[in-house]
Length: 322
Image (cartoon, rainbow, N blue to C red; front, side):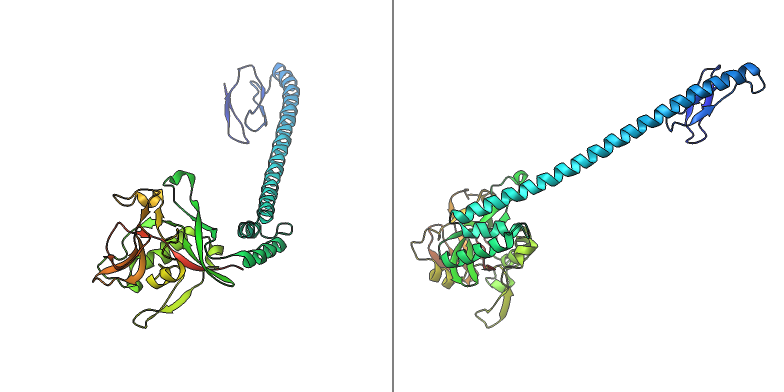
């Protein structure tokens, strides 16, 4: 015969002689007498009632034990996670302290900065910055931001490295160590920096992708006037031909732009790990062309057609150190 639990509606099959049972879903005692006026049935009902009542108590005790075990597991898991976070912060703090001891104050500064208010990280961050400002010089290489470089998007973005071109406390002018992308300077033959596709990409897509909001705040919004006297403002830019000659000597090893694997995949005939021409923002002396630094590291003032799709990009910007 079939009996229905009045509490949860669960239906179960019971033998015809059974007068009581426990719902396996909610634990409620279910009575199903075969003949309510039968003395024999009433006696059997009483016996089954006592047995089922004992089973119900046992069922409830089991549920309480399971609940206690689950609570203990959750509490233990939360405690383990908290310990893991604490251990991770301590490991990062130790790495930052080691970097400072080993004479890499900027790396130490970046790591202490990421730790926020942990322990005495703010005081250590200030100490690292002061040490960096007294030791930084042109030609140094520092890490800041991240961008896809090895061509394997599955392992995440790689840390960006920048060459220090100039120090004007509290700012440093940085140029990417490598060619990070390959794309046209302009979608047309126009060599005007203000209207170029490269300027838009640097200050929109690349800016958002390579830097966290906190890092973005430290990049100076540089204002200047172009050759026609028009005022522009941008955070990321391509160097001018004059800036390259002023900051990088003709034999400076940082003049040639070595192409990353990610950038090399953007154009035919470009090899990862090899130098490639990179854009400047100065119009070329040839019509429709933009000046570049060629693969040998020489400034090409005549330029390359602005819509060429085989020239590299080396972003530059002024970074606020504090």
